[in-house]
Amino acid sequence: MNPADIRAYKKRWELVAAVEQDELARTSAAQKFADTGMLMEVARALAGATDDDDEVAQVRRRWKLLAERMGV
Image (tube, rainbow, N blue to C red; front, top):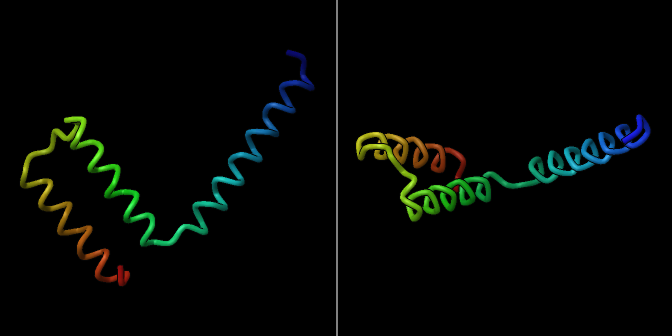
């Protein structure tokens, strides 16, 4: 790779990052909430959840409160 290739590579990834930021900004809170819930389910299905039941209950209470406050 020469310096021009490296600059072009960096520029492409800057453009990708800008598109990702734009998509994230346009995503509704409800969709973000749903996506997080889906990821939690995937972790559970893959036996990746190592938290104890008390911690899980506490996190669910927080998410429920957040959802209620955001009208989701």
